[in-house]
Length: 83
Image (cartoon, rainbow, N blue to C red; front, top):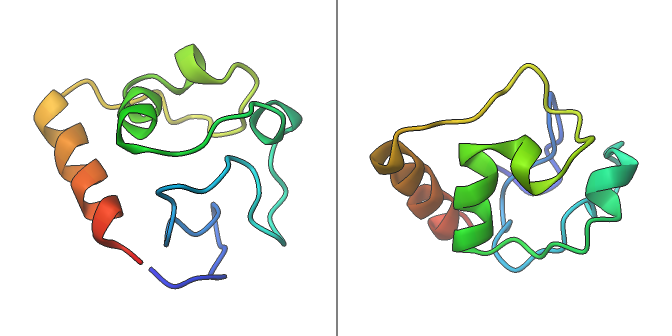
């Protein structure tokens, strides 16, 4: 992952501590941009598990979430390490 490398979605580089919906140059949904969320490990885990339960009206369809807690933990730990 590279900063400012927005493709199908916004870059996830440096996501920990970043306010949701704030990557310049990416068209976020109003609901994500106005959610007030700041991405931390717990919030990412909840969002990866069930995005609709965290932010209604996001545009990450058809992604419905990852139910496996071990897989979510691995994803979050990877994202923590990406500067």
